[in-house]
Length: 214
Image (cartoon, rainbow, N blue to C red; front, side, top):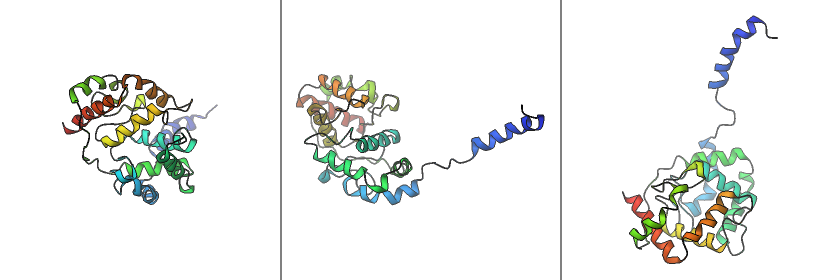
């Protein structure tokens, strides 16, 4: 049993432990040293690069970014036949500089410092029709496409529209959502039944573009 003096000391010790900084807290400064290898495809401030088919990272939910890095490392993403872009990203994620969870968390913390700037749009479609199609998407991505972390749904608002189109096509082709243990990906792939043709992709992305403009 605790002695009376030890019992009195416990609340003070608990306060120290609660407010002491974690030894494993994500370090954005350390992450800055890891990001240069990412900048060729994602831009120096995470705004993406169409020439390299790299999506915008700025403004994206940190938990989602961390989850995607782990999926690339495990092969649950970027291993499908014909997905050259995914394979390139998978190879980059497995570099020695990103071999620890601490490194991944530091990198994501640094990405979180980027300002969420607007990017140009290029997709034209039937926005009103897209609004109707989007209602199914809202359960995981939010009514404003802001993303819902509890549903593992990434932010779509403000993302490059050409990238959104490319990912819808990948889900349809089985290049994303193929891993048995990637439940969010498999759920997204199953939802592709709502978007049966390319015109549907274009219209729903055109509607998502309007959410960025309001």
